[in-house]
Length: 378
View 1: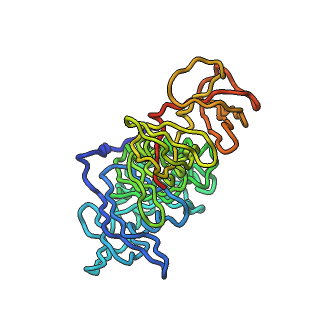
View 2 (view 1 turned 90 degrees about the vertical axis):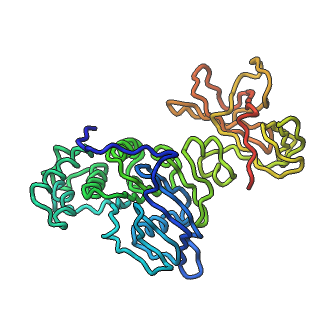
View 3 (view 1 turned 30 degrees about the vertical axis):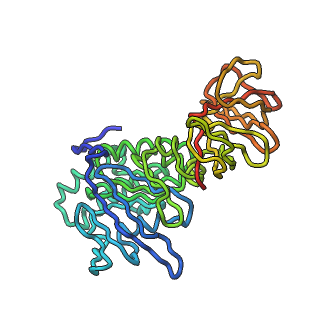
């Protein structure tokens, strides 16, 4: 995709500047607490994804930032300017906050052309006609709709409509872009493609972005950082790979798609290695961890960290279990298995090797390095 945008995206990191600051944010609906005393910084130029189930507070947080909801208490600053302060009675109107918004519904005017849809906010600002044309054409090129400006919006595909909605928000050159599950109405193949395009556009423009979703794949694909939310609080905040590799709680692991989660109790600890006996069976798993004997934990193993082999294949060290293939699914780039180790324990396994495909009923050995086993709190 070609872009004529002149801005380079700042790189989020240790020296990044906080574009959005949220302090002690609380949102209540009657007796229900949607957001609970939330503190959160969003770095200049980064894509922060708020991830969580319905009712976790992610949308309420986003609507508070844009000014569509009035929090019960707290402070919100954008680029150092106070947009909301409950103690001081400050609440800047949404149209004065310098924020662009892309909703789940496209909100495109079907009777207008693509160009007219994108140019609308600039016309509302009464900018000169020449500037409106230049900025609109630049943004249409950025989102890959350079040749579609004269086309009627009603003739567009779902993916094109979402690009028009994005262009309409970005043409205002907002300091902050908020996106509320903008890809959820698209089919799976188009959604996957637009994820990469959306991330590419965001990096080209360099706009600080907050993206709300309940889809963990979308969060991992798009985010510079992910905030996993539950009951109005951030359970864990970090880069996608860090969260996926090192979840801190069972809830975070489960929501990020880690399916191998087994409750158990630490049976012994020796030299930084714990042996955990899984609940309801005699199976024991070794983990590089330092928990006291008797501690209740959840054993967490990523499906891609499990190796599957013939029972006779030579392999030394680590956790090795004999099992039977319960299910096998070929998914193009990888194969997914469900391996029954005993009546109480089954492993999900993802392998990218086509050297051998195992079938339902095959006896196999599954292996896990103790360094790839995490012990989590509930």
